[in-house]
Image (cartoon, rainbow, N blue to C red; front, side, top):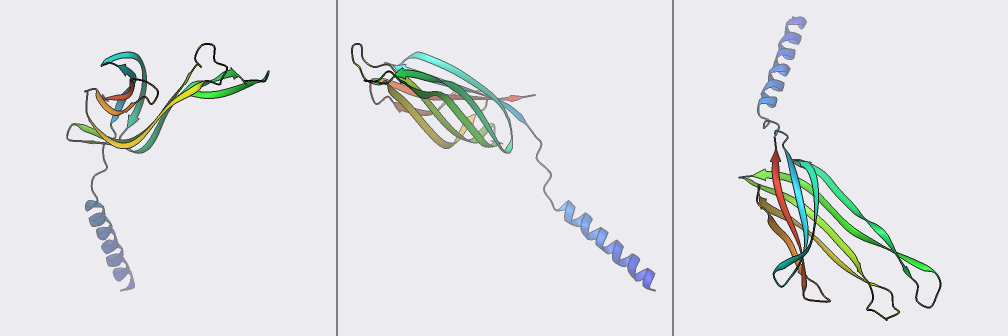
Length: 168
């Protein structure tokens, strides 16, 4: 009798486990995308400088980064020493999801550069820095400006454009 009850109990537990698994949504298929970022400097409606940064990402809650840059030295005014300044481009992406032919993801970008001092002026160089962070949605295979800001020291505008292309 005990064996029969144990067998019935084990069968019941197995049936519950199968039912519980069938109520789970199917695991999402992993998809990969090439993200092409274009950092553009625009003046008077024309692109005067452009740089491209690509990364491969997959859908899901992953985090992805691109880092490029360097250290620039400059003379310390009134001193014989040098200072260094970090400049470059940092782009971070997270939480990539495709919905209805569009890609939704979180993007943070930091673009910094050094501007030399005016000719004949003995002062340290100034820096230009643009930082953006937001959840964005872009159509697949179409270049889309996701961030844009005016240069505080001139008539230029800095833009970040994203083209998301499915792979495979």
